[in-house]
Image (cartoon, one colour):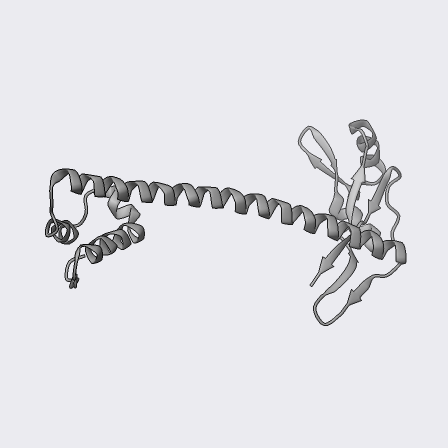
Amino acid sequence: MSGLTLQVFDETDALALVREWIENNPEALAESGGELPPELAALLDQFEGPFNDLRARDAAFIKELRLNVENLLAARSQIAARIARLQSWVDALEARLFAQMEAAGVSKVENTVARATTQLSSPAVKHALTNDELAALYETHREFIRVVPMQLHLDSKAVLAAHKAKQPIPPGVQVIQSKHLRIA
């Protein structure tokens, strides 16, 4: 705070200035162990009165700060609950819109405010092949099997590439593609 010109007319101004500094500098106050900068401490010293009155004002100020913290914590809880509630509404409404569009066979609806389109998601490879079945496939369809030391894994990239190129894929393997809703 060095170099700051403090213009204080009465005790109310001094307390307002201290309150503002505390609200804007909580880390500095914590690092100093609750000690105010010398300029602010000197400012408050100008308005010293009986010990009881000063400490009672300190207590009132602390009480006010504590209430502010409690109010902010309560507000944060209310905001979190509202966010969760709104997100569940968004999810439910999106699912409903998607189902309605699918049932109607419509892939796009729009107006001047929003556009909703159904589109295919990226394809994924799904299989329930055992290690023995993968080993057998390795003998006949080596390009679809990725060898990991001591394990065989189906190479999804190779299966997707074959599917895209309209080439046959091994028996027991299927390429699935779901739809999802996108709102812009």
